[in-house]
Image (cartoon, rainbow, N blue to C red; front, side, top):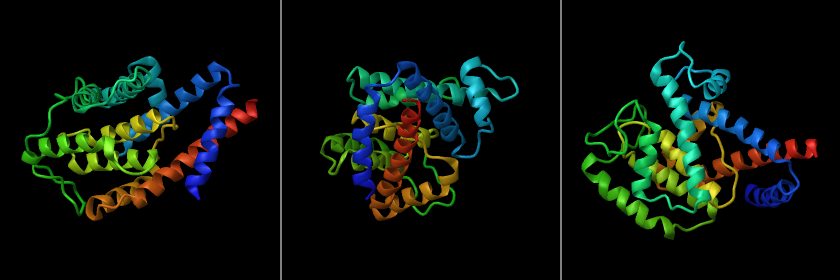
Length: 244
């Protein structure tokens, strides 16, 4: 059901956008960037910047009442999201080296980015644990070799790449934010709206991601992402129709 509704919404939005004011679209995009960045940096529960202050920080570039790391995580995430949109507009393929570049942007001035981890890590509370660090290079190489041959529709492919990257967990830190940037890269690339995973659905998201890691089954996570896409399309279409 979600799949059929999503395709109807996809076509409906494409028609609406042709008649929309550019400034309105830009304002809606900025609103999404603020919410997406807030959800992204808050997902692991370490960054304390509020949604309102994420908006202020993006505009002011500095909010001294927060730590330097917290501020950098916000500003870097915005830069990284802008970068994937640029790559899509310029038809630049996100290969393994560009993925490392994206990680560098995400953690710039926090720690050295773009380098796969050289230690083993444990994820608290998870059944599946990331592979031994000596296997990371091979696993990432195989993932990028497989990308063009992933079966399924555009959303299913985006979810598979997102979940597979999260399962490998190739970097020491920043993997969750980067995995969700990957998800949006492949959604936008196929002309879908990007999504943000809200904090209210964090546990559900992690549970479905964990299901893939253990059972190698993306179905629950695909259903979850399609539901979020349907919600996002409804939100955007309603706003555009009201102002039409």
